[in-house]
Length: 356
Image (cartoon, rainbow, N blue to C red; front, side, top):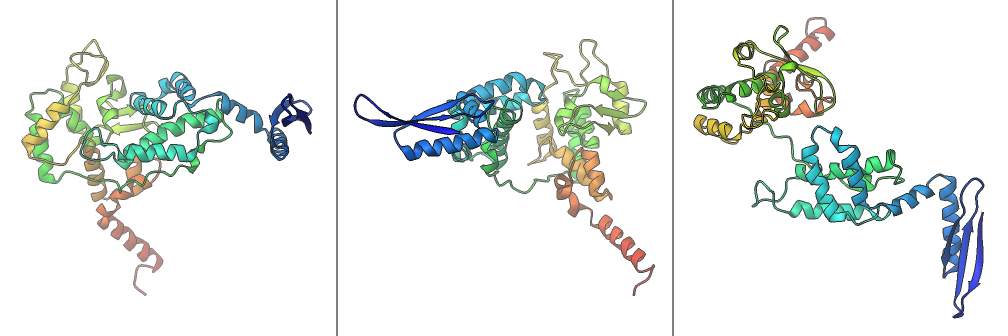
């Protein structure tokens, strides 16, 4: 129960000291100049203790966002595959709101920071503001830290992130190679002075694998007899195997394997790291006369070709390693013949093979 004691100071000022005593819990106390505020604090504190919320609030006042980020970087970040991408985002949050206690970290403060971030110039294109997708990555980085603070460390009662709106993302971009572009690009890659480029592009184009999945692949993941590249750790956390087409298998069998690394595409400078193909890739695109095309679009090209050859959305999701159909919905318009034939089969089944 909350007990309130009236006190008079040497200067004649009146104050009210509140004590909340509940069996099995330490006594909590506070002093107020106003009796109404003292009663309010006593009632709220007693309710919070009974509901198990009070001590988390106290913890939230003891820790700053910077402390939470530092603990997250120490305990969680080493186990995240994309840690090198997330670290600078966390550094930005530390500089922006690091001194704020978790108790004072509000949704409006976070939203204001994200709004300011959205107005900053893009690092790749200084003449443009940051893309909504980039802002979304910053939001997700902070959400991950606060989620740990709530669920694992019990530093917060709840995260304010559920009151921070997600940036409106543009419709997913789909750029894929036409038949003519594909032939020109593969020829340019084959004629490149870089020995890795043709195989790397062919592997990405015929498997639909993400850049990190194919460029970071190792020989131990490859089974030449089964024609598979086994992915143990993917972006969505599930295992899947990429099928290796005959031209890729032939190149792999002929490829000279280095003894100082297990990587399929090791750097010549540091065999522990994957080779950087940015310059030869850009030169091949220029030689092929292809504009507005990125490495990730090789994955789009694979998915688009699969859709146009009759793959269903669940089949596309399985090929690309997506857990939901939302990510592959962008390819739905590329398979009209497939959906039309499916509709015909359904109608025929319902109507017994003939029109009513």
